[in-house]
Image (cartoon, rainbow, N blue to C red; front, side, top):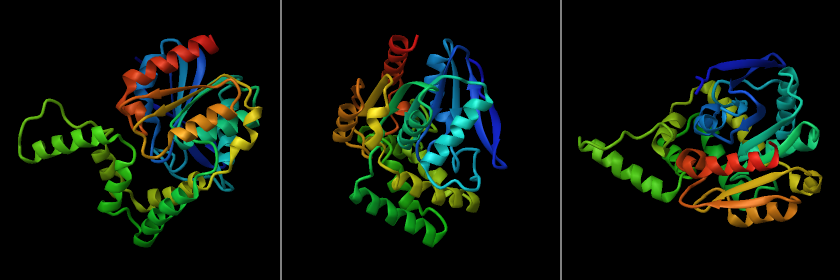
Length: 294
């Protein structure tokens, strides 16, 4: 495996950070809300021997902290990522996206269909966010704006949404054992809800400002399902059965709307399945790419 290191592409005076590993047909990895480019390392390790893997830090995440001017929505971000592809002389690529990244990926495919030859959409929904979700997430966002920080209670609530209940129970037991100075078989990894909650409470003013700008773009995204008949390319939809942020119905709706798409469900995983169940997810992606684009 090659070691990841960050590169940058400047857009309207602001650096967009990404990593580039491997060689072959290009894959572009797009994370969702509260994610980052490093979270894709398990997938890149499985694919970089055969593919050129580019993982991006979206604005307000990872190292890409400051938004360029005139960035108002996910469609704008999709256009900026297409600009990055042009800068890297990439004429065609496949997109592997999770959560909000799926909406960005679909916008890219609609804006430049000749550039995108396959879509892998993991635990995402490209239609309108349900109104009840918008109201819930807006309350959380209002709390962050009012307090100019992410409280410990809100951080814990948010972080728990990204993982399966089984994983959270395991974490709780491990944390209790650590508190009681007992020896655990393995340390709690950085990808867990506990680590995510700590990271949220540690956000500085600039990071909070970026999060407050990105979150509404994700929450109030446009309904790209209206244009789904234009997504005439191989598409794999992956849904976790313990996802607290997306429903199976949404995955089935995407499959019904996107012509020729296939749907696969993964057991015992939450929203961040790429961290929890990489051993299940990676073969699905690899097999799909081999069958559809190689």
